[in-house]
Amino acid sequence: MVAEPGRIGRVESLAAERGPTALRIAVGGQLRKLREQANITREAAGEAIRGSHAKISRLELGRTGFKERDIRDLLTLYGVNDDVERETLLELVRKANQPGWWHRYSDLLPPWFETYLGLEHASKSIRTFEGQLVPGLLQTEEYARAVVALGHESVETARRVELRRRRQEILDRRGGPTLWAVIDESVLHRPIGGTEVLRAQLERLVEISSWPNVTIQVLPYAAGGNAAAGSSFTMLRFAEPELPDIVYLEQLTSSLYLDRQQDLEMYRQVMDRLSVQAEPPDRSRKLMAEEAARLK
Image (cartoon, rainbow, N blue to C red; front, top):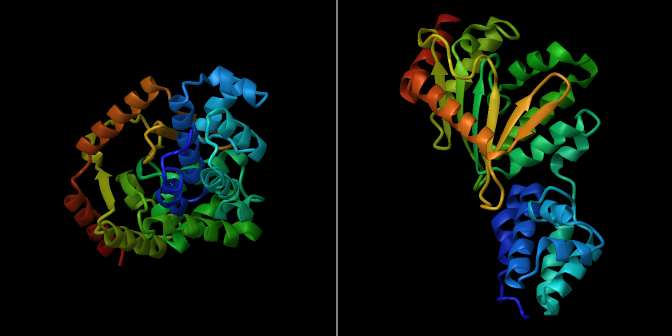
């Protein structure tokens, strides 16, 4: 079987700009399409690479790195014999296996958070609720420095703040994700780093809330109890239809990644209710501006 001209090459233009995690997801999706077109089961594909159907599933979802030998064997099994098409996909595999920009900070990061950074960088939309702090993607350098200082040695502070700044670059990236953040009103009054740091942070929120790809809502005290019950969380959505949404819950020494349909539906409903309970974006911007002015 000769692959449809250019169909593999299009993967790169769709995903490469969003980093190796997105490219891995896209390549995995292409492998799934090739397998299905060849009417080959995951079990048979797994046997062909001395693995299992679970390994094929992980490869097709982009949740594991690729071995070139495995990909060559799968392409042969799927009837992709055109040398140009094979080499094009193998080149994408090599790029997908390259470490992301966050790898240089791996000495500071637990493995579970490295996973999150890759998914965040690959996402097309981010929805988050934060009940204690300004979300990391929206923090000023001084606010981030104060947050980092709460839990880490000062010798690491500069690089941790730099890491947070690098994360924020996705909001400026062409084709980057949209961000929809709901923050509890208490965040506007908690003087992390002191009054001046908080004031500058609120002014930054007012500024960035006018960006076309950023929505910020404030959940007021007047809303009473809320559906999140004090739990901060983030929902990530991806351009690739093969990859389900992911809910990320961070704890002090670990994290949870939820992708079961029933969990996703529950968190979608919670996020929707929070968005209804929160002030609309224009009113939220006014609240943040008023609090920043009060702190002067």
